[in-house]
Amino acid sequence: GTPMFIRVENGPEKDDHLAVESLLLDRVRACGVPTPLVHGCDATRTRVPFAWQALERIDAPDLNHWHKLGGLDTPRVAFEIGAAVAQWQTIGLPGFGVPDEDLRGFHQTYPAYFHLQLERHLAFLTEGGFLTARESEAILAAIVAHESLLHLGRGCLVHKDLALWNILGTPERITAFIDFDDTISGDPMDDLSLLGCFHDAAFLGHARAGYQSVSPLPPEHRRRFWLHLLRNMIVKAVIRVGAGYFDRDARFFLIGTGSTGAELKAFTHQRLRAALRGLREDLDIEQGL
Image (cartoon, rainbow, N blue to C red; front, side, top):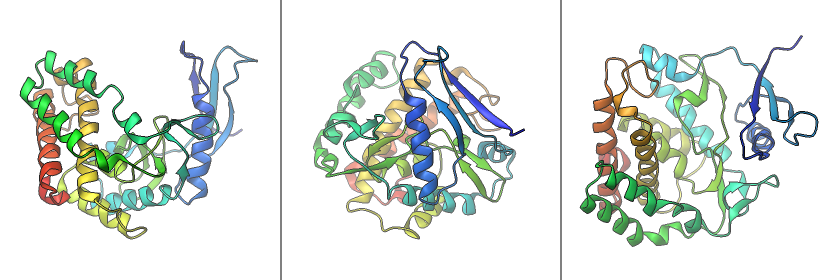
């Protein structure tokens, strides 16, 4: 008699990631951020040949639904998102990168995680014509020049896929944050930088105010924001080029009402350039966007 949202994982990896995510959902909810209740989960594959997870079914669309309709109360929601980010960052995780079933990151250092596939990603974008060789070299040089920012003593919980389609609610309030599948142990500015992959300076300003209502921003927060925006936009560009996102129309979730794939491509270029400039010049976040 209880409505549930059922997720099944039957891929070839046969990992226990649904069980890890279930633990993360409970930890995040315990620190005051709304997430779906986990009614049950089994990733052992001993009774059935797949992993499964039964979540509370929340009767609300994602916030991107309201955003595309033009009805989202953006200042209020962005503030709530920023405050939630600061709240779940109170959860420290040992190690860095993707956590295991003990919620310990796989890597011993943060740079080891941050640099995963970086040169391969840049080569892919260069070979595919999205970046020039000079642009790719400039990006890598800027990251190397600011390597010291990656030397973290301890990581905090980072959602790592923070976007409006992973938040459920009404036009005025958030009901739940979902999809902690990509969560890592990482840098406090990473989740705010992920918002910068999609949103404008005004949105980031409200999110930053929400964050600061809970916790002060970390040292070197501007350059750490730009450094992570740069890395995240490289990943976004690889996905968008590889999956043909720039050939889609406004029916695709990433493309706004009345926009085109060509505009998404231009926006992706613009954000990469903005992140590179912001990192080099230590710009204010709102100024650089």
